[in-house]
Length: 92
Image (cartoon, rainbow, N blue to C red; front, side, top):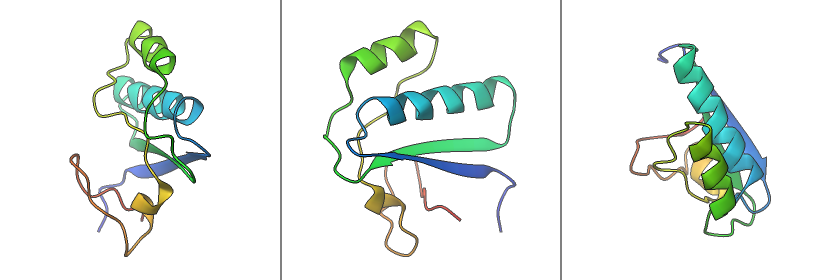
């Protein structure tokens, strides 16, 4: 059973800048407008770090960057997903 929230997975190669920017902004705007939406980002070959300039841009826009990290898309594969600190993020 779902809570009515739609999940969006934003993919790119390194998951270090653009996809992380999109994840942060979508979640920020969803909270601001009470939209039932949750964004995640991942990459096929993640860099293992988020570009500091991307984090700075998000902070300047008022976005909470807590928990943003570079991650592999395997974390979101249903049935083989690893749950991380914020909870189970398998796409349904």
